[in-house]
Length: 114
Length: 115
Image: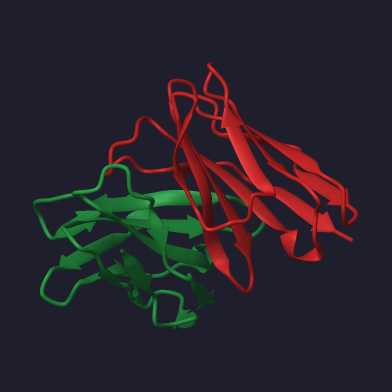
């Protein structure tokens, strides 16, 4: 069974631009979560989607948004990029929203903002 | 609100020696606890989880973790460390009574196993 796939693997953008990251969950998984990972802040929760609905949201500004499609694939968008948005963005899927369902992570998208 | 503390930024151990990575947690209700490992330039890999029942949980790659409710701890252990165990380890907690709650991760502990 294929794992979680994130595209692209690497991105370089300039300040003020916007970016869209894509995530394909494991087949059959209906929940998708997004995390931002930086050396200083560690893993920060962005949002979680289940059945095309945002179920949870972290403490990020409105420039960060996401969505989930009917096939469970998810995208996140960051508008008006800032230097501090440089990070590894991780997507994770799980079978459902059950509290004991482990997350399965993709290898991430490395975003560099210059 | 839930929180996780991993008190050690880095743990150094010689190959063949026992490895312990510490984790303490705080939740309003009962916890679901998880350990993940991250290798360079990769995502996190699930190692093991505690839901209920036996306090000693066995997971992948020879790792195990012991749940201690009175000390609110969930330390990760391996009897004999390998050089290939060198990686970043994350402990995470979710409130069992809050199905909609997010999974809260600790800051991570870098494990360095020397030959």
